[in-house]
Image 1 (cartoon, rainbow over the protein chains, first blue to last red):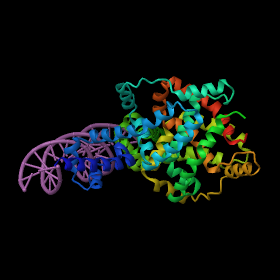
Image 2 (cartoon, protein in one colour; image 1 turned 180 degrees about the vertical axis):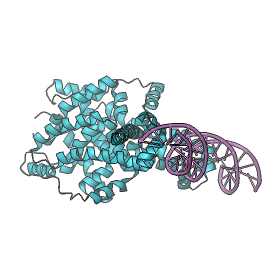
Image 3 (tube, chains in turn purple, cyan, yellow, green; image 1 turned 90 degrees about the vertical axis):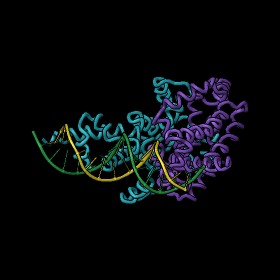
Image 4 (cartoon, helix red, strand yellow; image 1 turned 45 degrees about the vertical axis):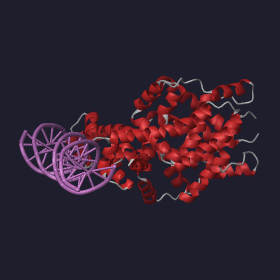
Length: 204
Length: 204
DNA sequence: GTCTATAATGAGATAGAC
DNA sequence: GTCTATCTCATTATAGAC
């Protein structure tokens, strides 16, 4: 019997993830989630009580997928070159598996920024100064990197990884791609992005 | 009397823009738009007939703000250096005036990609090959630029400009900024981004 | 053109049988 | 645990007075 629970609960979460990721909280319908899970709408309430709580489960799961990735780049002890060459392809691969995840999180954060602030507060992230910023600063002081605020570089790195997925429809139209071409584009990006970004940091 | 029309209509559009940009179509409430415009809910329907049509007006306006900017970078005849140095600060300035616009457009495109496809089709954009891609290719062929697919560079440029606004809450938390600090961050970005991106393109 | 009141519907949530 | 039927409320949309 216990297995039944986990099976249904897992089916529900999976369906809810699909629907919430694509449509956001406001656009999602409990009926659609139930249909996608192949069960009855009442079951959603049996397991998760309300739409809010079901959403909360999906949103926390999403943060749980994103934050470790962010922290791994922010806090890595490795030199930046190795860090980016390892991190960027891994990051892109993870997003490929859940392509709607970044847009979902960004949209829901915009809709309700306090939720994020509260979560961070409650988890009590010590918010240590990211090591990657220190490393960038050091490289600049030593004249190896060009003089750009480390924060600007960091945001540009994340932007370069995440944005293509958030803007997929726009990219497809602007560059005349179908889904297959877009997938090739992402694979190419995995290879070429570290090179491009590192080249941007280094002094001539 | 005619003036009354345009005044009310303008007030409504402005209120609808504020609400739709922040909450998206699904999260927006006609009541909230009416309150924000300081008029009665019924007036919204008098002027725009339905929520769908009011949204359509706001969405078209949004595309009308974004596409000219995109085309101006894509199709500029100027050398890339001048193009980026002029375009990026101008782009960022425009977004600063409507900070929720990019997230709004991206979210609504994800929610309904066909709308975009249809619009582009109906406008019949000839979709000429972007000149900036040709210029990048030329620079590579001549050995001035590093060998990265021009499309990857183009998307990275757009990402670097747009992403900070879409991810504002995340950036603020990750880097411990308040609104004032974030504004300074954006101003700094306007100055430093062209430098960083051009450095990324150029060969050592 | 602008308002109040109300209709019509959609969606989250619950009751209760099995 | 799972389903059907139903309740309740929020929200879009309209009717009709002024």
